[in-house]
Image (cartoon, rainbow, N blue to C red; front, side, top):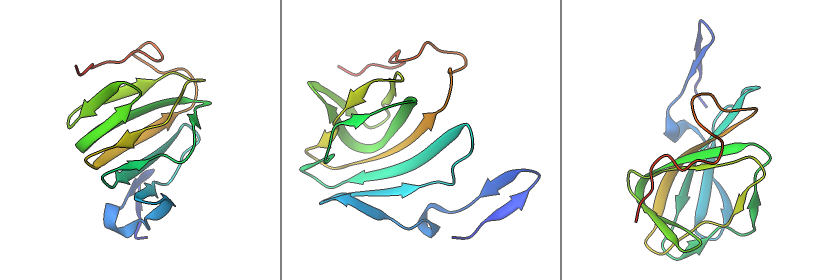
Length: 122
């Protein structure tokens, strides 16, 4: 992984982060964590599902870069931004494949109510 540190800034290219398979058809690239947050990029192959119920101790937010992510009865397409409150759980899947960029935030969020879906898709 290539890192450049300058005035407390860390930068890297996504291709420099090793993709780890978490289930058949699902890979995750984990960004360098801080005390306040953990970031990640997840790729879902068509027809894949997260292997277990994902329970959150902290708030989780993600942005669907491409494809569609299905959460229960809701489908979130490209451009969707989804927020889960601390203590919530979900088990995402994708029929068509998807790429999502997310972050888990420790402590209370600033500027929004925990768990509020800031943008809802139909």
